[in-house]
Length: 194
Image (cartoon, rainbow, N blue to C red; front, side, top):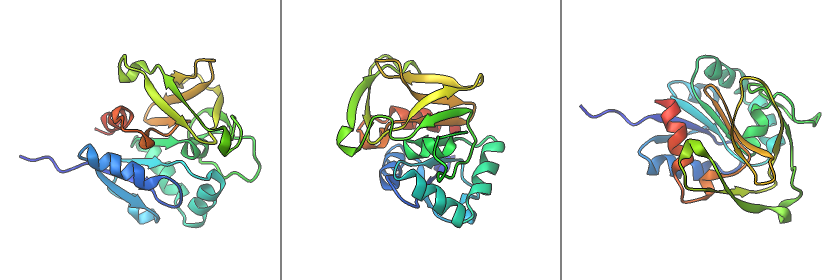
């Protein structure tokens, strides 16, 4: 019997949602664009993409998505935030205009490395993905400044800054795996979703 393709939602309000959908489709999952609360039904997981965190947060509030995303987290369905998505998952982000889901016990600093021109790439050691380094692409990236006891650090920059974490069914990365050809982080998320 053929198993149906897993339905993984990608919040499609703004930002790099198409790239995540392409990566999911490449891995045999069914990437679904999510813009309205009813589109969260039946999903096996959800990705909150990079983009402009304040815009994404305000649109999520305006379209009534916040309660549905929080319910998914409570039900144990995996949620992964990349860059701006990581900011949305955080308990605090040090900015009064930033809507937050407050689902992960992390504090983040927005634009921790400077402006767009200060974007960079770095090889990251991520034991959960194997021995080979993962090339992290950081674009106006946040940095995790504080984590709670239940949060597992998955990756740090060579200087020690925390850039990837997991808290049960919740995953957050300061970088953009969807902008690389490396499928390992998406495979890791799909394993949580199975």
